[in-house]
Length: 557
Image 1: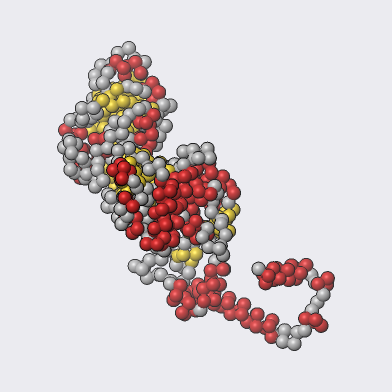
Image 2: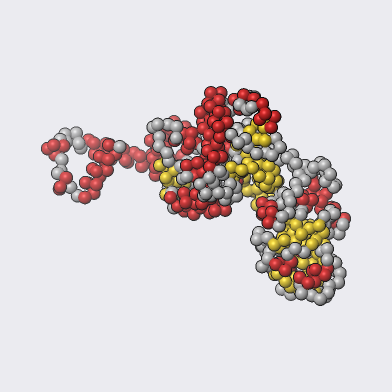
């Protein structure tokens, strides 16, 4: 990368720091075990994955408390809250169970104990446990099953459970993220391994516990799975649950799952110390970045118009932007952090500019080679270290408006138009908008144009393995540059853009008709004298006068 561009990317980060949107926090983030780093939303791809899906019984600590929650005078037998999860490996980090406050739950007496299940999901759950008898039309509860009572999740709040295989008390919470779309209506909650889990545990004052390291292995002291990867631990944990009698069902499902865009491998949520650009954190001007970005969406013109709703929905729902990466390459986050507190140096703004000047001369290696004593006092050298994190590549691309438009005299900021494929609503369009709003208060563009992807004549995406790739250089060599230009101008950009040799041949025929028509018109002008032969403007039809004005404006501009 150009040294000046690298320096300007660092300066953009500095401006966001000055604006008050940068902070450090321990949150669960999408984490790639192959990268050994966190990923931003734009770096995540979703593909189908086959996962274990298990139902697990969490014992209640007090039958009396369960009876009271369901309005019963007494309750005999053991009682269990049943959760359903597709990530058994997260159970060692389980610190709570979440119920929906408005969801109706049933307490059902079964041969496996008194089970608490969401009313809308109870029948499907009992089928999985082999407890529901009868066919699809006449299924009914067997004689050994009885609905004892019903209550709402709000009445279950703060009941105590036991962890299914560890010596740990588990609190039953109310969480807005709980639904009755699938499972049991009760969600095991591990704040280190899920963003919704994290937020609900913060609300209840439950501290974050993360037993998984950056290599995806369990830390020392984790019973039975110490040193294993999370994927290796899945069958071990399932076996452990079966051993202690807490496994009610064990199935497999195929579902959409987050994968790394580089390695194409499954991601995990893992809590780590990262640097974030806060969406709902008030900046130095008292405004949140989310509100600024939503206003910027309103102020931007979209082509096609549906792009507005798409980008707006993404801005409304996106989490804080994880901008730090634990990689050996990339633009560095050129901050000095306190060894004990992790706080940034109080003079970070000035220090960052000093580093940026050095990067202008020698590139980002100037930071990696920098001895901190060159910029810090002896006392600060003892207390502060260079931050080793690098920046999200989407921060690099999202900062180009500053390093290009702001630095070149022949260009203007904001840009008249940004144009890219429809996938960039979650990529370049969004990262550019966030950096622009954080540093300069608005989007770095006035208009956004979203185009479709180039496909073959059958609508299939271009692929070397399919042999259907049409390279622009090949079109230029065989048909000429004007044919490629005309195909581009004549194709509806709002959908997929089909191209093939057959399509290009049809474009060539259109080109010939246009060219021959123009040649005929020009030939008829061979003896034309505008002074003697031109029709006075007053006698022209309106469309001709309009065409002359437009031609004049084109010549002048």
